[in-house]
Length: 109
Length: 115
Image (spheres, rainbow over the protein chains, first blue to last red):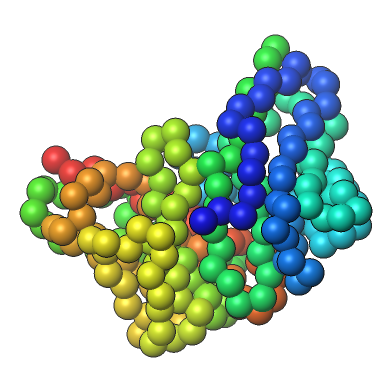
């Protein structure tokens, strides 16, 4: 079973920040939070990951709560090309990697 | 360049036939995975392998088989026992016990259609 819960869909106006939430209340100490996105009929693309500190790269920011039970992916200035399904997964150690159903983000012109 | 290669990109199969999907990686990763994705759905784990000559069933292994004779290769056979094989299949690899490789975790997928 997937270890994360995400809303099935979200809309965001082009140019605005997209904030995608993820709940992972059963996360354990050695598990990282990863975010991937999948554009239709392609392999998922890595976005960002973190353990407990907030992280930022050229694509996005990741905010992880202090108790690590939830996180938010932030796309600071969403564009139409950011329309995709976004997956939040937790992974660590010698585990199988399982995905939930993700959040379908629709960026609106 | 290092990466994961899936072939073919599109595959057609007649009902009742077995078909094998190829997945090759040159990342020196020990762990490899197969996922299935149906339209509008998330990724479901079929089989995974943490090391050569060893593999485990995922959540939907029925009707599928795998082998892991080489570190670089993890072929998936869709057998005639799989009742609804039409789907998008994704292969992935990682270093077990460590973080998911951030640069090339997934292949680009094989779309299988039963005709």
